[in-house]
Image (tube, rainbow, N blue to C red):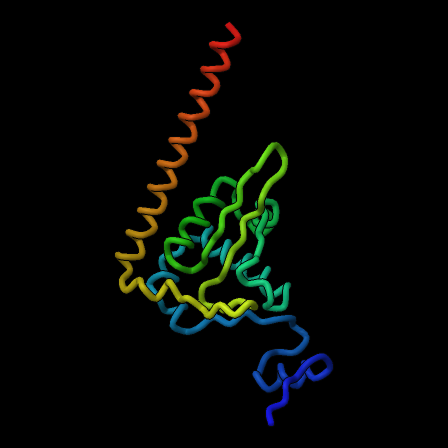
Length: 176
């Protein structure tokens, strides 16, 4: 008969897994991930994003993977520049380190927050780790994926800027 440890037995569970006591929840990083081309291709800002998501995961006791939130203000407190946050999200997604469900502004100040999932960890609702980073076999492939993701993001930003300019031209034409 196997025993499920809960509550007061949590310290025994931590000792059984050789987790340090008194340090909060630990986020495991597999050796294969640390040695992968995807991990080595991450930029400094991307690494800060992943670190912030791991901290968020640990703060929730490992129960919120897939529903992790990292607002821009929180990421700025962790040392990221506001202008680099979206680039880092797309870079980490292209490398398969995280899966992001990007939020959006629904109307005015109301916003739907972005949620993130660390792909090497499972979720509390039963989704097994997807390990998308394992699909990248070489450093060149990792760099190509990052360049492609940033190129797509730049194109989307250009389209959005053109739409904004067209809207402002329409407003000026109506006012005249």
